[in-house]
Every structure is written in structure tokens, then in C-alpha cells.
Image (cartoon, rainbow, N blue to C red):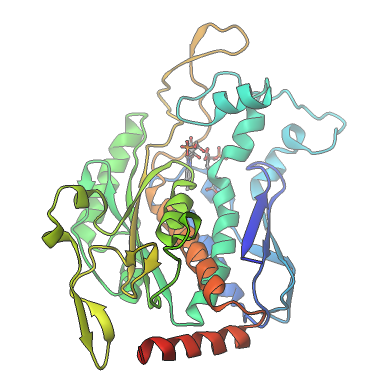
Length: 389
Ligand SMILES: Cc1cc2nc3c(=O)[nH]c(=O)nc-3n(C[C@H](O)[C@H](O)[C@H](O)COP(=O)(O)O)c2cc1C
Ligand SMILES: C=C(O[C@@H]1CC(C(=O)O)=C[C@@H](OP(=O)(O)O)[C@H]1O)C(=O)O
């Protein structure tokens, strides 16, 4: 059975819940590191007031004993601190004095899931859509991805990310090693490497917010230490680059994914795009460049995976766009909910974790085993096969 997970929970409900199946036994979990990843997701310039209310931590409630996985499904919860302000509106059972209709949403926001969800599920209170379409759910996905990240780390595979554009402002390109990239971007409010770009991005976000507007951007994720041959060319749904692209576009507000040089590959010539093959005793087969972003034929090349995701501007606008009231069908401006004005830095953390998940899943498909020890044996023997090829 391949690695899989589901999440449940509403943004203003009591908690988010995730169940992960397929993690091997004897994976030593670092809870501090897991919670650090949740903390990273909450930061980032441009976030709204909600992040001051939450202090995300994951509580593991199944599948782990004394810090190690047992091979059973892992269950975890991330509590919503904001729930205490929403019980009368959001309570699951009917309660005395409860007020389901309070905070009803009936003027859908262009760009959010409100209208489509209302029409599809026949819900006349669009809060029932909003509550689940909210990117609060990405807290659960980061907790899940943080476990995948720890599994990868046990095999020397490192994941890092950076913001490379917010609206009009682009960060200077770099190809830093994952660890250094992680260290430098961690010290930045907008997850860029250099302080000058950080200052310009902060001022830009301030302006956008003052205008009652929102802004998106582009983020990049790098995975280093990946062996050659994760994913497969033999079937469409085994191509790892396509799975990663799907996972990236599944992040709320993400509208595209580029692998390697991505769309630029449609402009340049073959001789400028493809990565020449080299061989040396120390490195074995490797490439002179990595325009392919670590993929050929849906399989990893052994070079770092480099993928980019584009995030559209946040849909909730403090100066709202035109909408229609679903009660009257009359024109009205869209509802205004408390909101972030820019969540690109936070979303770059989400992207790292959904990518880590897809890589870990492909890793387990290739080296599959029920325990870490079994996977290690399979991994080592494969590395020997590749070395002596
Ligand atoms: C980390 C993060 C935070 C977000 N915060 C907000 C927000 O505060 N307000 C909002 O309207 N949308 C926010 N979004 C975007 C919406 O969740 C998203 O646009 C919505 O679910 C509709 O889905 P779609 O944009 O993928 O079509 C956020 C997205 C991410 C990844
Ligand atoms: C709660 C989170 O992000 C939320 C994502 C979100 C949306 O519409 O996607 C809307 C906002 O919700 P609220 O109105 O409660 O402030 C964000 O804060 C989070 O990232 O943990």
C-alpha cells in the first residue's frame, strides 16, 4: 500500500485532523522539528491577525510509541485556538444559545470557493464552503509533510524553499545548497536570501495592504540528495514530476508549477536546454547543468529537484470587488472576512511540505518496506546497483 493521507476539519472548528497510512515502523520522530515546521508556516510578512491567535502544534494521537512509528496509521491533530471565539457559530452539535445563522456568508468573494461550493453542495450559507476551503487546512498538510521530510532526512535528502517573486518585485536568482538556503531564508520575513529584496518586498506588501488590495507571487522548492530513478516513465500516473505539479497546484491559490527552467524551455533551443551527461569515478553519471530541474522521463536524474509554484493574489479584498447577493440576486460588493494580504512567504513553507510528501511517497514505492531497516537495506543495495552500472 502506498503512502496516503486525508485531512478533515474547518478553519474555525475545534481542530484539524490528519490520518497518514503507509509510514514504515521505526521512524524516529523529532516532535520539536515537526512543530518548528508548523511555526514556520505561520510566519511571513503580509499575514492577517489570525496568526497572532494561533500557536500551531501537532498532537500525535495514534501510530507512535515513545517517539517511534509502529507501522500503524499515524493520526494527528492541530487545535484551532480561534475555536473558542466561534463556538456559538461553529459548534458541531446544536447548543443552547448557539447561533448558526450568525456570521452567515451570502455575498460570495470572487476568487474564493464560495460561489461554486454553494451551488454545488446546495448550501445557502457560504460559510459552510469557506470553512473548509480556507488554507487553514495547510497546517495539517505541513504536519503530515514534516513527517515525510523526516523520513527523507534519514536518507540524507534535504528540502528547502525560497520566495522568488512577490508581485512586481523579483529576488535575484541563486543556486545555494539546500542547508544554506534554509538558513538564510529562515532569517527573512519574506523568505528571500538578501536583505535589500526583503526590504523592498515588505514596503510593497505594506502598500498593497494600504490600498485594500492583495498580491501573489512565485516560490521555489529544492530537494537535494535524491537518488536517480524515483518515479517512472512507464505509466502516466507514476511520473513524479507530474505528481509534484499536481500537489503544488493543490495548494490553495496556487495556479501553476514549473519544473526546472519550466516555461523558458518553450523559448530556448534544444542545445541550450538539455543537460549534457558526464561521468566521473567520484560522482558517477551526472549532469553539466540542471535545466531539467532533476527530472527526465518522469524519473529523478539524481540532480536536485527544482520546482516553482505561482500563487495568485489572496481573494478576500478589503476593497471588495463586485459580486451578487445570493439572497436577492442583486449586485452587491463581496463579503469581507478577516484576511491575509499576502501569504506567499507562508505558502512557500506549504510547498516544501507537499513536495516532500510526493518525494517520500515515490521513495517508499521504490524502496518499499515495512520498517526503516528494511527500506535501508533496499536503498543501500540499489545505490550499489547504480554505482556499479
Ligand atoms: C497560506 C495561505 C493563506 C491564505 N490566506 C488567505 C486569506 O487570508 N484570505 C483569502 O481570501 N484567501 C487566502 N488564501 C487563498 C485561498 O485559500 C484560496 O484562494 C481559496 O481556497 C480558493 O482556492 P483557489 O485559489 O485554489 O482556487 C490563502 C492561501 C494560502 C496558501
Ligand atoms: C487560518 C489560516 O489562514 C487563513 C486562510 C484563509 C483562507 O481563506 O484561505 C483565511 C484567513 O482565515 P481567518 O479569517 O480565520 O483569518 C486566514 O487566516 C492559516 O493559514 O492557518
